[in-house]
Image 1 (spheres, rainbow, N blue to C red):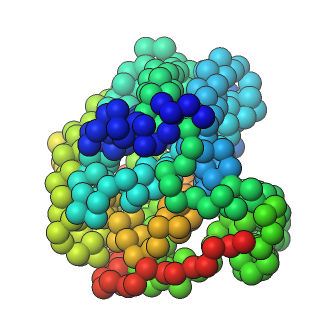
Image 2 (image 1 turned 180 degrees about the vertical axis):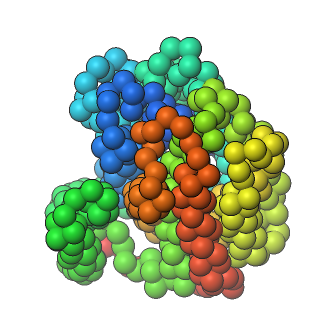
Length: 496
């Protein structure tokens, strides 16, 4: 390895600003991955018309992405340890690039789903990396500021993306939403060659880098997630017995996964043995365990609403895709302003208070949607969305820090991967749950989304779905309060 590719050489070359350049590099890639996740939602109605598909099938455009992203997150620590930061990060961005091109060019819905899965796999590898860098490259009194800077950049893309995506859908078609990630991927790949070291950031064990990937654990996690989502979808339009079987298989696979990870944690001694995908010692840390619960519920509410809100505005209130994007832009900009402010607060104030405030505002934002009717002024709808986004601004920079600050350095990569995994499981669950509850309530009110005209009864079904999400956020506050206090870092022996 040449001198110019080592961490020490890069720090010497760029000085104190290097850690910010490194964070900016992974932020651009994360922007691309998050954009690929969220921007597709404004194109759902157009894709429904193009492919002539029902809601139950079309939701896999979001759910398939979520499943792939959720599973691949567990592989990030192993990939970083085995291949180093630059190869792992660049490989994931290349996959995201190819998925965007392939999805935009596809004329078959199955090929679109394959492209979405490829994008999801890439996004899952990328998204835990920034938290690892923040906790390793920045001092404790800078971590909140770094999280705020990163969060502000990351949310600007989803804030502006749906607006641009909505216009592109109206002007061109749903294909344009796939192509939007391409310039971000190109920029991130260029910066990765300059600022990401080839090797590690200094904490990975050389023995861990020789460990094999836990393929059996990955299979169990995939089975649990897929059966969970299929079971929820089957509840909508399939036999109840089939749904019950799928959900039972999901539960058995989950319990088997936990048992297998526990076993690997105790037998992983040889240089080429398998390392556990999920180090269960993490959950012995109270703040991390409670943070994981909050992350699951938060993921459920966040991604459920990301799916539900555009569909509500278009099929409930009859707005165009471009109008929906424009309506949501102010809320995104407010979120981008809120995050760096709260990030600085996270360096000085208890994170459990910031997370709890965020959850209360998020629940309030969902609850206020009940007051919206067909004659409601647009500025009121925008205001209610802003309330929820301010809540997100309190949660985003605080939750990871509050959950992971007490971990020892050799567990940071695992902790970031696991808490991202838990959040995405919640997200995948939330998308399916929101679709399930919406279909259930629409049927209860005698409504069909395929009917071109909306009605007060249709809005009532949407309102009941939003109230479900508000209740979940209120429930998460109980766990968020347990983030308070300081625990000593977990000390773990080197496996080997």
